[in-house]
Image 1 (cartoon, protein in one colour):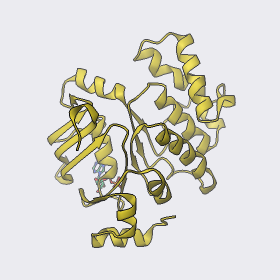
Image 2 (tube, protein in one colour):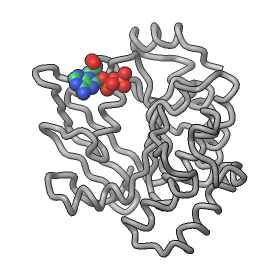
Image 3 (spheres, protein in one colour):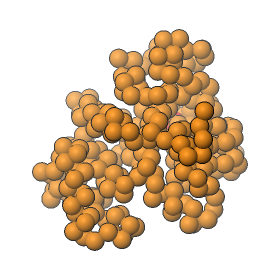
Length: 249
Ligand code: ADP
């Protein structure tokens, strides 16, 4: 049971179209503060679209999204408020290639939060330490490995002091040997109590940290359960088919 004070995200009967294509169908989702939710499902099922709607990278056509008490509508002030609270990490890192790692991390706190350069740099170094990469601060993204770049992307998001973190397949673009260094950072974040919604195929991560796993298919959430229930006894045939194709450990 959630009360308004412990709710992070509430989505009710969300529908999203790309042209005539119905990408999200009556999706409802409630995430409590501190909760970790893993969204999984076949490619094209709407996972990325769903989390992109939460910070208005995609606009929805009907239904409601409420983030920490703010309703996501067309008001710029509401969108800005929500974006300040919601950090996002993308599959392809999305770092600014012409800026050093440090500059990538100080930009938004200085521009959006009005932090002084000194404050922003101190904070950036704090989070670069946290993702175990402080020695790379003066390099450019192109000089780092994919795993390092993704850890920078996580640090950069954390520099905005978000209450909620969205991850959109953060390890999918990485060489296999770099996956665990990013997952380790995500696990630490989870253990510290961050509210997280993660689209990932890393089912070991889901088993380890998720409070709930949600399985999406054809634009809808078709099954929700604890990792134990979902992996041990999936109810839906499509979830069973999916699990038979991914590595769960
Ligand atoms: P998933 O993250 O589960 O792989 P997506 O949310 O990326 O799925 O995509 C859901 C569906 O919406 C797919 O059929 C995809 O082709 C379509 N889609 C995603 N983004 C766009 C877009 N910008 N324009 C048109 N169709 C899109």
